[in-house]
Length: 326
Image (tube, rainbow, N blue to C red; front, side):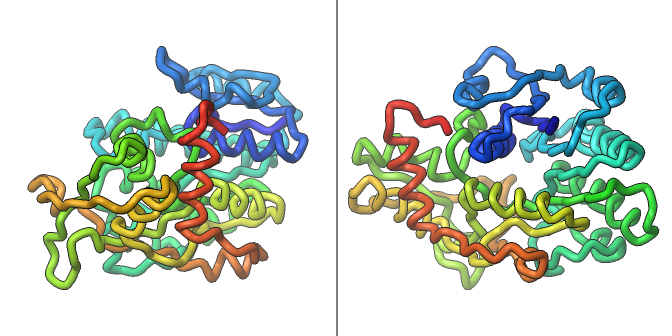
């Protein structure tokens, strides 16, 4: 049995789909569904058990057949300001799952985030070293909660105790792709503008408020969710321990991402620029780019799809179809 928390979410549901493609259906999912369409992320997927989040730790303690835990559950909205709520969900629960997996001898793979790098002033190295992790400076509560759990893992790696047989942190960069539709304001730019672009309308991007950076030339390491999950599964297969950047290693601009979206619809680009809100400017990341050397050294040598090919697959294979779900 493989347990996936956050299984109805964006990346979690893509893990379920990837396991199903391998012929694996002995999956226990754990998530909140609510009253919206989040369930559609799993409508095509096979699984055999559903665990209410409040019962997860008791359920894990009652089972002896769990082969791995893929922990994707988190409060990921960077706008959430309730520190107690975020730390309960993102830190305390993660530590409890880590403790269980260590005691039970069950491999654990968990979601971290490139938000731990903040402005990127200290670089984008994914060293699993306590002093390095503690030196990262996230810009928001979500990033801080992720950094704190990364520190717990790095500390245990350094001390050589309290770890599962494999413990893999996935420091996701800007992941986009099918099944992100429920994320509202946290959706990727592609998902946000696809409707307007398909109708032949223009779109707006933020102006730059930093000298030397042109409007629309703010850059991120955009990675297609299929590539992100494939790289992650390879790490799980090899039973690695450590925290790994999950990105392409190539930063691309928001303008290029928007242009790729217009191109996928075979339409000319229509882009205007608007001022960034004042309260966002100090927290805004102008550049992220994953260092992928440790991922490659761990044995994952599959090339990542280009931004243009990824956007085309997303638009033509999902968004522009009658059924956009994976």
